[in-house]
Image 1 (cartoon, helix red, strand yellow):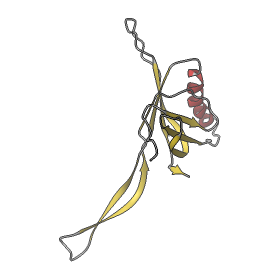
Image 2 (tube, one colour):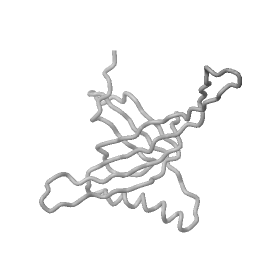
Image 3 (cartoon, helix red, strand yellow):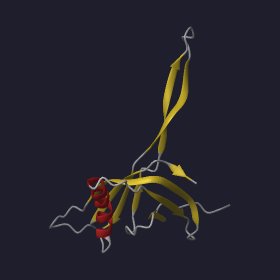
Image 4 (cartoon, rainbow, N blue to C red):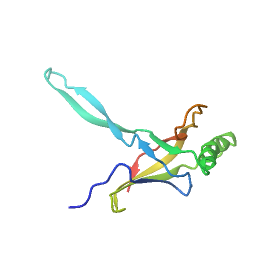
Length: 144
């Protein structure tokens, strides 16, 4: 029997961009719209059919470090392309989960990835907690 993945061992890759090491990933999910069809003359039953699929946005969190500027630059790069009315280059991304022996147990590959929100750290003079930044990504589905 293989060893299962553990929640603290994972890797996020976004097509050729060094955006740093992420410490938390949330929102890896999808759901189908459910269509209900009421059949005429049959009052005790409603058909339920799968409709469009919708993918949840991902929320990635990482500590602030020397490559934090890469994250903000990648995010704002999309705005520059929009201003110039250029075609947006959507990325691919993957999230890999590892077991305790550094073996990849599962991988989620995402297509049509683009940033939707960036949140920088919150500063507090009397605090001593680790500064983090958050990147939210939208995508057009899983592949491979």
